[in-house]
Image (cartoon, rainbow, N blue to C red; front, side, top):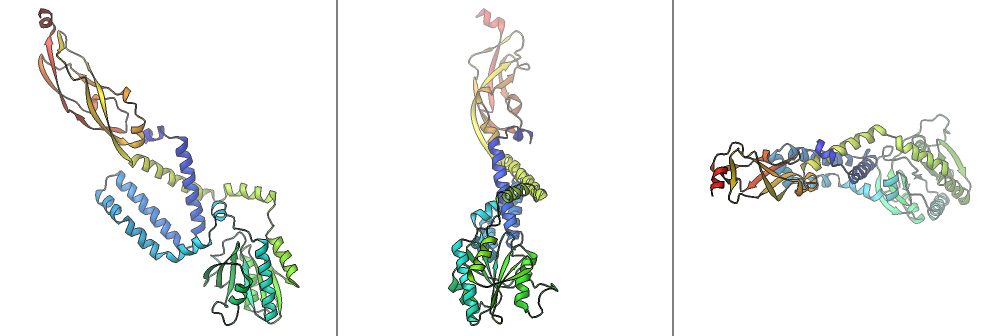
Length: 389
């Protein structure tokens, strides 16, 4: 562990922060969806696979290596609907910054046009405009559409002959995200007793979220805009468009700065948890990614007994194959490696010596896979013999 941390680079820190950010954004996007279970299952299997490699569980490693593709396929089949909804609704700004795509002026015009066209034809409806809050936890029974905003499409959805006319339409950014969405019904006592379930549902979604809802009443032939639990009647398309424009230009410079400062500390325990998990994952990956490398390492002989000397041409180097994490191996400088052979117990004549990991100066965290040759022959002769010759 200490050896791995000693080789920690700034690139590793950036890598950890990026992965933590992506996982945290995925969690925020999927935390209220069943597909979150798929993400957690994949993460759990990934951690188990790494741990199995770390502590050498060959059966588990073999099973995960061979069944990994099948496991992912099964999870995708089980959660295909949730994945489709997520991919169909997510945008890059929403994923990176948690900020939904804004309605364009053209989209506002089409919504206002559709609302008053429905009023003129005596067609009732609910059009929910998503703002910042995720509405998936408040609605149910929805049908995914993921369609461009078009007044004709909106009117046809709420046509009594359409199978999609029951419930509300949810618009997120410049897309019609859902139809047939069932909204929470307001229990407020200040709502007029003349209003039915549609009006109460339109007000209810604005009480539990920051969304706004356009209520088109086929009986009173009127268009209402509900916001924060209150309702205002709109007498024309221009008035409705102005209200919607004000709704979608809510963020000023001060608001943005405040939101960014709040986002840094918002959900800090969850962010710290993900950062810890990703850091552990980095440690496991760096430690598990084992490799091997070979070097021809010089041999140094020392502690030659008195009155003896090395004769002939002893081995001057040996091939050493080292094993360890790829990060530690890549940091090795082969010029600093030496194989030191102790001759203090050698005898006159030919000595067959074995070398082991104790003979080489390698950093901790790296082990010797093998020496080649594993043994060497060194001939010692008496110093006096040499002088006579």
